[in-house]
Length: 237
Image 1 (cartoon, one colour):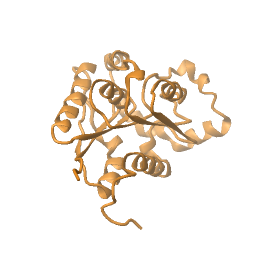
Image 2: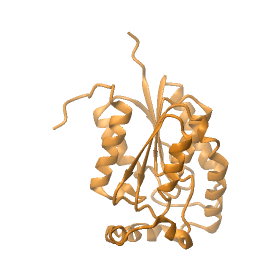
Image 3: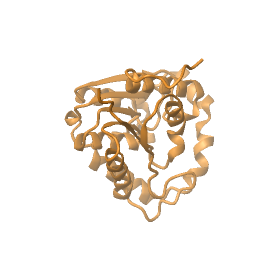
Image 4: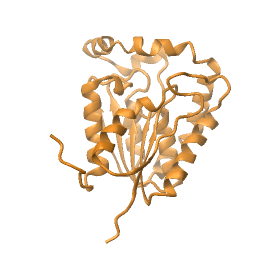
């Protein structure tokens, strides 16, 4: 019997870096044997330098990583977060992808003037405030020029494509107190992607990697979806 060599492509979000998906990567890599690509877009990472790079540069990095992975694996899984979710979905429209995980994919983004569309309850607003995510991202904001935001909007619009052309099994995961990408976006995406399922996570923000309990749930959901038919390396307590 031929055993397929699995490859997993991890695609992070706008103004983020590998650190956004690093916990999920470590969780899966401890349990399963797979090839992987984990690109970091130009200008991104722990220190941002976005003044002279474009959205095309970011997407090109993601696409080249896919092609490198496809050269050494015959079964491809792609995990994309936020802007990386948009890139992942576009790659799945163009190339062979066997399974796709889209975490809060940024098919739309929320302007502050439109936060009311999220219809957050007082409890959900309190939950978001208590997470204190602003303190984690505020130091990075000074390194995001207006031009970089314009590049983000332009590349996202260019790479959404037609979601109906995604033919692989797809899992969408979205937090219900996401202030950056409204979860309604994933509800709409599920209606367009033929073989898709959606999990809405209660009391969960956009930056899931900063919430330990929600991150564990996300990792387990991803594991079960991607590797349900793959044997564990070892037993886990």
